[in-house]
Amino acid sequence: MLVVTNLWPYEGDPSYGCFVRDQMESLGRLGVTHDVLFINGRESRGNYFRSAFSLRRMLRAERYDLVHAHMGLAGLVARLEWQAPLVVTFLGNDVMGRFSHPGRTTLYDWFFRASSFALARLAREVIVQSQEMRTKLGLARAHVISNGIDLSVFRPLDRRQACRDLGLDPGKKYVLFPYHPAQTWKRNDLAEAAVKQAREQVPELELLTVSRRPRAEVPRWMAAADCLVHASEVEGSPNTVKEALAMNLPVVAVRVGDTPELLTGVEGCFLVPRDSKAIALAIIEVVRRGSQIHGQESVERFSMENVARQVYEVYLAALGRTAAHRAKAGAQL
Image 1 (tube, rainbow, N blue to C red):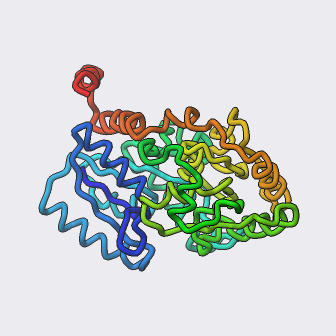
Image 2 (tube, rainbow, N blue to C red):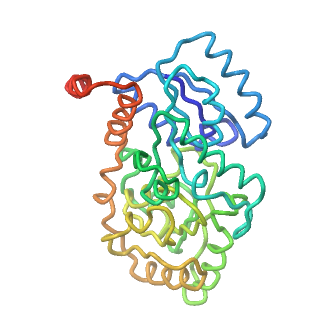
Image 3 (spheres, helix red, strand yellow):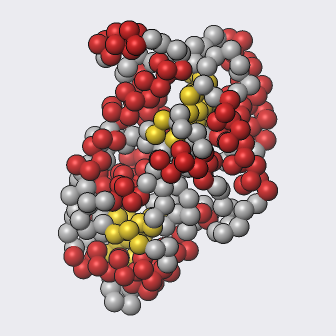
């Protein structure tokens, strides 16, 4: 199989797109072998055009049974290969909209979304992250399969030890915002404003803005925090929320993507309006409680193994396998 993606770890950001790499590694344990065409659109949008030539070189060197594209723009490049069936995974803002500035859509943002809608009709099979995305896409045949999380990595850890490892004061209260401020649609401005307001009642409160860190560090930052704030304008199924739940870290989130489903029934987490005052009040409530949640069980269904099996079934459908082939493959797995 050929994987075409604009999300993959690289030297400038070793955690970027690691969930795509993890998914492909978990599929490898089911017998799926793959090559990767990584399009680093972060460095230059021109890389999308240059990747077309890289794709042609790879297709001349190898005959693939299947092509799996992750994200809409990468899927446009992947669609240049017409012989092998195409599976496209849409991840959130490629369907729901991408806002370079909160509340304002640019021409590039419009093209980004419109191309995804066209691509979905050209793909053999489509994967989306939430029911909301499937409804927005208007494609009943789309498979709702949220990206998985590695439960062997994201698991409860000792907070005081994590603080010592990171050089943080365990006597303070930390709010984690796990995105780069340049990603304006993630709403770092709301997180900053909320923490500033909450600090009036909790003076020892600090905001930890953590991004582009080595993957091995991320669980320690989550373990050291007292809560995670998620205030994005648009999402599919945010992995950071699922990872925080796996580590029993309280989450304060706005209603976006599948956060309502993720937080339902998890005591100690809060679903709030996209408003700094509402976020601040929830932060105060969380840190005053001062206890972990019981979120780990709620995300067990998102284990890498469970998600890999679901994606494998989509591959079989894309290849037109019969029910007998599916039963045989299932027995082998």
